[in-house]
Length: 449
Image (cartoon, rainbow, N blue to C red; front, side, top):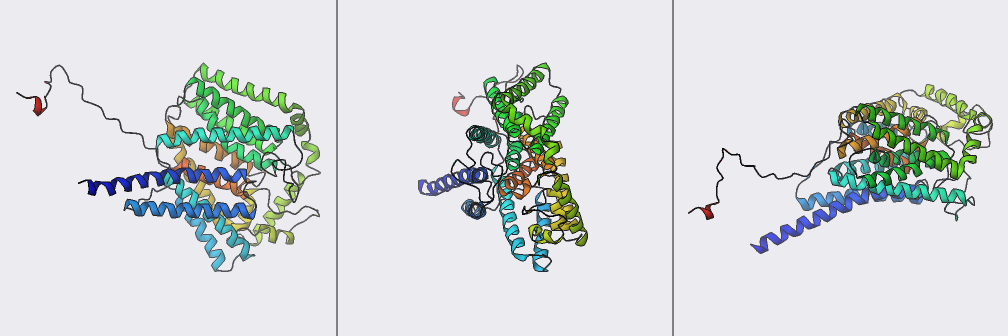
């Protein structure tokens, strides 16, 4: 009997260890991206793609050990598959302006898809989601603290050691301050939702609020106006969610204290820089590529779209095609459209844009159905936090190109997948039947005389 049960016990042990490795490997890879300058360099892109491939192979090995192939479905898989099919058509039919860039972009989107698939397969229990929420809260607060320290003692280099090859506005581990703000827009709702829910005790809620305040403060101190707008939209959506839950005066005081803490941090650490940045809006729209030049790029992008409206110019081909349509002179290399929606139209046409609309409709339809009791349910709270982060980045995407940055894009798509997934499984609690006065207690056979 022992010889038969020992292999079974070993198999279950290996499977359990592999499940933990898959869970933390998947989300650890997501946390690696921002630290590696946003995964915009060849070595970090390779790490993202190779890491996601190895994790999928590990998942397949786990299925082989379990002796059963189980796939947890997510409704977002359908629009993702439709988008992949369109990219394959572009490559196979030669409908791309630059095949190399389209293939490279397709490989990157395969990495995003694998991470989304893995997150659906490995994250399905309450305790896993709760633990990851705290991990991401600590991770975001640590990145924000580093960004604050680097802002105080800046020397124009990433990590005080590496000079960007093409310049930039460094903030935190990112060359572009707007992309740092995009990262924080996705991370700050996690501790913020924890701080106003019933899923933590008073001390933990205070810690979560402090982490959210530090993260939110760096969005403003980074100087990203799109990030500021996106964060205000997130606060507005959260306020609506709180009103729908009919929260009382205690929650109102908590939110007010959070906002006061953010304002205090802003004033203490960088009030002068913040006021200078806000006052520069009118002047910078005439002197930076992030200002008035953006509108010109948008008009040029619409012109590009009109030439190939159905299937587009090819995934990743914008910087190759754009010089033919550029209507102004500049020393800047315009590698992105500074508007993710227009770039999607240019590269993937109406069919690709339709797949994106399908994706977002499914996302928010699923989200609304899961957040009814978000203040007391882990599944609802995690769904709301992910939806808030995704909403913020979608607002910011109208003004910048966060979804062209691999680290931010991977986190965005995984958060969308988590928000649209089925509710997390709760542990089953065994309850003993309570005898009633009219019911006689039945004794075990060993105790019957």
